[in-house]
Length: 95
Image (cartoon, rainbow, N blue to C red; front, side, top):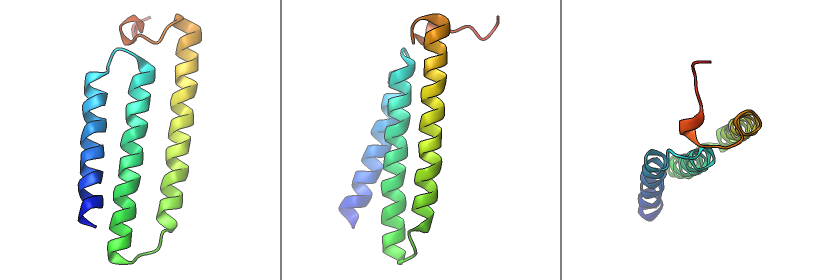
């Protein structure tokens, strides 16, 4: 179990590091956020296995994370149609 906990911490930190370093493209930011979501899923799985609880919460978590991914992709498609690229510098919040 300790190897899974170490792997969860490593995956989470690498996902956050890639999110902080890859701020040029919206797609790379979404991919690193999905990596963080998968690492948190692994952490929840390990936590629930250690204490012997039910895995129903994992299904709820997966459902919400899929909805979050679909929302991110729809925002990406909207920005690609509006601006023509996914560079974060070209997006203007002040119209």
